Structure formats: C-alpha cells, structure tokens
Amino acid sequence: WFFVIAMGVIPFPVIDPSSLLFLLIGTFVGLGLGTTLYLMGLKYIDASMASPLSSTSPFFVIVMAILFLGESITAFIIIGTILIFLGVVLIGRNKGEKPVSSKGVLLVAIAPAFWAITVICYKIALADMDVFTANAIRMTALGLSLCVYVTLRGQGCMVSGRKAFLEVSGAGMANYVIGGTMFLVGLMMIGASRASPISSGTPFFTMLLAYLLLGEKMKKSYIIGGLLVVAGVILISL
Image (cartoon, rainbow, N blue to C red; front, side):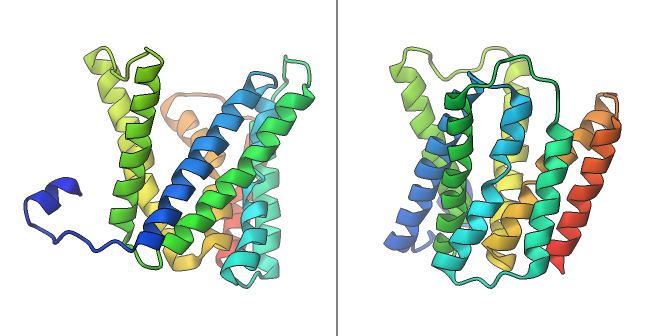
C-alpha cells in the first residue's frame, strides 16, 4: 500500500479524521486491550475453557450493532450465531489440567466485549475509508506500537533465523494482510452482525487444516462441531 502510493500508482487517499479515530480506537482498545486480557487469562485457566469463553464475541457484536449501527437482526442470525458458538465449544473441548480460576474466567470473558468494540469501530470507519487503506493503517499502527513496547522492555522485535523469519512473515501475511483485508471487505458488505459470527468459526478451519496438513486425528466431537459451524454460517447467510 505504502509502496504503490510512493510510486504514484495510486493517489494518496484523503482520510477523514473521524474515520481514522474510530479505526485506531478499534485497533488499540479492541485488538490491543482485548487480546492482552485474553492472554492474561490464559495464565490461570486452560485453553479448553478459554476457547468457548472467547467465542462469545458475536453476541456482544449483535447487541452493539443494534444499538450503535441500527442493523436489523433476523432469527437466522441469532440461531446461526448460537450454532457456531456450540460448534466452537465442541471443537475446542478438551480435558483441562489447571484448576478453575475465577480471575482467569473473568479476564477471558471480558476480552470478547473489547473485540466486539473493534468490529463496531471498524464498521463505522469503513463508511468513509477504503478497505486497503484501513488495513494498512491498522496493521502499521499496531505493529509499530508492539515493536516500541518490546524494545522498551529490552526484548527487541527481531526474529532470529531465516526459517523463523519466513514462518512468521508467512503467518502474518496470511492472517493479517489477506485475512484482515477479506474480513474488512465482508464487514463492509454484509454488516457487523453477520461478519462477526461467521469469522468466529476459525477453529473449524484450523481443525480441518490440521487434519489435512498435519495428520492430526479427527475426533467425533470435532466433526459434529464442524457441522454446527457450517450450518450456522449457512443460516446467517440467508
């Protein structure tokens, strides 16, 4: 994005200040604070418990979309969201080893509310900003802030080794550049109340890729959970 603008391929976009503000709020308050709370909670509870708790973000999004965006919510969206949530619970279900901590549960349970703020803020920002500009700004702002943070902590932000660099770069490209752009496009086209539940089905694709590429076993609960996710996505799309 920065390269093509510097080369004069496309003109520098005129960015509305209010849209930029909502974009940055969504990035730092939602992704930054929400993810931090989630990671803090993982210190106290197992991932098997954290996964279903963190999958409640679409419910917060639906409420916020009604209150702040004026989106209409259909019965298909509600039922589909519930099916996706149940599917994620089944896929992420595992026997935990850590004792249940109320502090950990609280931290992880609060995180989805901040992630919902991210979705709502991005939807508002996209009203006066194109997707590629929005994705470039949010990723640059978040990346630079993280580099500053780890540098101040004396940890540095360099990846050692060519293989590690390629793996991290590839994961970042797939997740944040391609995936992030596709999510913003979907958010702009179908609204927050539909985009958020559909995007929460990530564990289904993780399970499928782990089976196809890594040879991991496919449990019965995974299959049922995957079918619930697919059914939920179909309902939301109606």
